[in-house]
Length: 491
Image 1: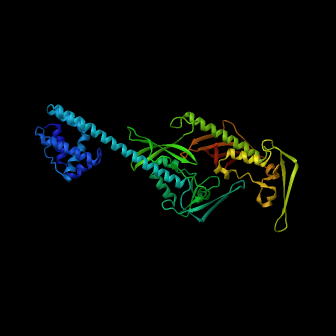
Image 2: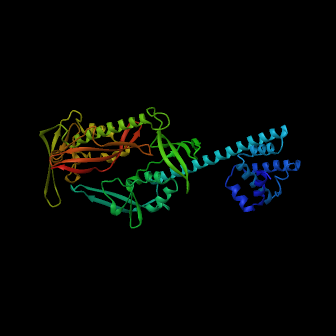
Image 3: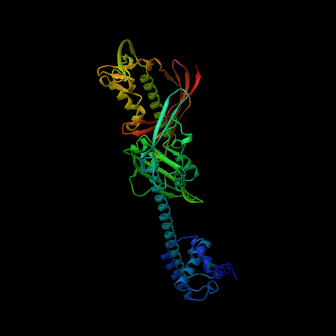
């Protein structure tokens, strides 16, 4: 008895459950195609008995029996490397096949192969759409601020650093089901991304516990006593992403079973194209990598290459250079003033105590008035980065009061800087050899970390600051500043 007979007997002797497991584990064709295939094989069996030993023990019938036979056929097709090829192999071993049967076999092979390919395509494209849709929903809720919250229940976090600088944030209680704890958000992330991608998506800058909270980090979520709170600014000024097209594009399944696809979405009025790499893990399909690809002309092809890296690193360096030059001007020491021309401001408090401030006239050619400073500010900061520019406390002269903490007084045609602020400020210095890094985020932003040196009358410090840069219609702008980390070098 030949090998084909042994194979036939193996499947014929198998029970229904075994055959179903084999067939279901290899879903090559649709049920309709399986029925059609069953009918064709039945015709061949009824045409003669020259291959009766091959089909011995297989009963062809409708209902459950038919699906059993189709399950056998699907499994056998896999074993033989394709149904048509297996049919030809049988006929070559047992005698020459008529030309008509060869032609029919070729037609079956082509039709079934095409059907299997179409089924595979539909399957992995459906996976790509479902996962990227789920990712966008998660991104909008956690990163863009669209979670449901209770604004009446707040958590106030504050801290004072070693220098006595005070920092604080206000957070709203998160009430949306499935997102009320860090654990639940982590669980949702694990259903979308694999371990490495999930760690990138849920980086420690966004989440912390109340015990670990620090004003030196731009934390968006804080967990306290088992309850989760969202940063007030994130909720009050949300940014919503939406896909431009309903379906993913450039979807492919490679020989290793890895899906690559892309989606284009609108974020902050800009269209951003993002490429996803999707892998099949022990827990099912998961996103393994997310890379933004900008549609602007200065970005090349379909992925950030070395040239792109140089582009955004150059943009990051130039913009952060401008930030430090600007902040040194606004802090005083790099700003030209005339000490001989002063503005004296005084106010009595409720107890009758006289509170007095002295301001120096600003004579700087680059910033002759407060309006010039504001304009320069928004050449560096984005619209949603206004909060980062609040160090520019410029108060109209008629609105001044002692408790406003005004750094600058604006008199329209000229402006003044507070004496104590100017005398206690310093300047930043840096070189190309100092620590500097810039990387693209999944949101299409640039995250920059750079180290500088800050020298003032009191001491010399090493400073390390993190920036988030966002591409706007007017170019790159700073959208977020994390509080600076300082280390005293000398006093």
